[in-house]
Length: 260
Image 1 (cartoon, rainbow, N blue to C red):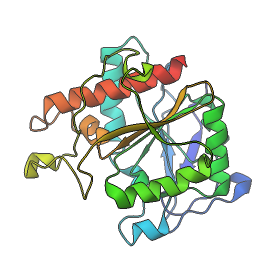
Image 2 (tube, rainbow, N blue to C red):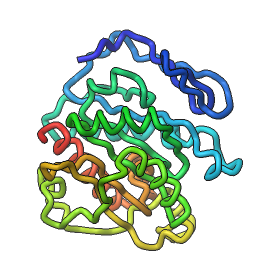
Image 3 (cartoon, one colour):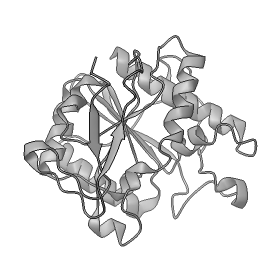
Image 4 (cartoon, rainbow, N blue to C red):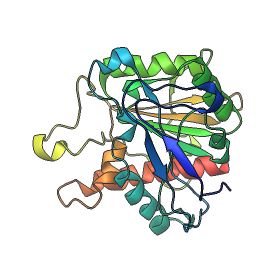
């Protein structure tokens, strides 16, 4: 397991990733420090810090990858320890795509991917990570515009692999919980508006990308906000059934990633 005493430099806007010189769009440097007293555990929540898609951002936000951080990690990790026998670390970790430590983790999470931008080097690193057995869960992006922005970068990762609907009988949906229920998991704004969708993302989709052996490498949760359901798990106004389902999807994905 990796050394959790090390300081990991990350940023949402300007960053340098070793010799590759990865530059994020704009902003300042941020340092995320992992408590050196923490035991790493069997499972570490890893969030992917990416540079923003300049045409998709259009002034919208500079650090979309930070959405729900660190509250989503906090609640989800507590849920893993409560609901499973997996020993989950107490806090999450943030990595940029070109960090070599990415290979130490079987599961990574990327949020608001309708605003990400992966260059050729980042896409190649992510492709290598996934083909070596890694798993990527993407979440919280909505509608046709954000789908197009997500797919533009994902096509650089896998130009030769299709994005398909995950079959109902896929083991990822049954490895621990039988996930036969398909409801749209909304953001917290549902509490105030009563509307589960955002933009023109009326229909939720569970899609994925598979390797040559039929292993799910990328779980794509489109027109949903699973991270918000984790983050607001202790809000009495957020629907319990939606939070419970969000936990089950996350748990199944991580168990699948750790066993396949």
